[in-house]
Image 1 (cartoon, one colour):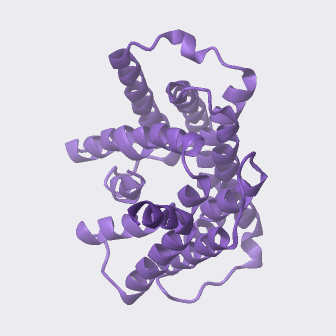
Image 2: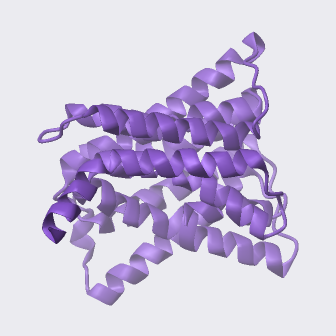
Image 3: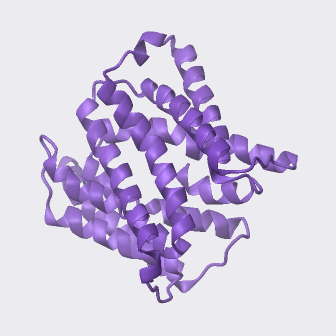
Length: 279
């Protein structure tokens, strides 16, 4: 779902970032409410400790606010590369979680994934960090720390059902609307295609993806999840290529190899267990 983010955002027209976030997170809220209705989940699910709400709303809104601010204060390639340190931070930070142990192949796999992501962001060309954009780089770094911290700390609230993400999305939509009214001029989608792109954004990359991510980081192998997350920029680029928005290059092929090797390396214990079971 996250691989569709770039394409759908490009197809959503000239809607400003915070307005787009408000619209899509409103749709994401409806996604959660519909799922709760289908399963018969009641409103008491939202009666959680303040720490849960601070973590959830801070993670969703904080990440997007910092990312938008970073892109406004630094070149997109450099800011995106720094922001995409979050999978590496998840793998490295997992060593501090109860019952988790960081091994060399977890870190090596995440670094290979980062190298692949760097190839995609830079297109295989040189990248130059300008001293004039230090503030933007710092915001991008905070962006990476925010999402990795949200993902890791969510594991400490493993007993909290993922339905509570519905409330996080609702609060994020309201905060994004406030930020839009303060910082942006309203621009509505102009065509049915642009409205459809906004709807699909709210249903998938800015909607359903957050619910399955919450379940994954709470109950899955956090090291493999972190390293495998570098597949997102690769898949996103491949989607853009398939849609005619980008061209296939050698850098994309090399990135695919690096990211695949990194994910396989991080998942080495899983492959070993599967081989032992088969034997």
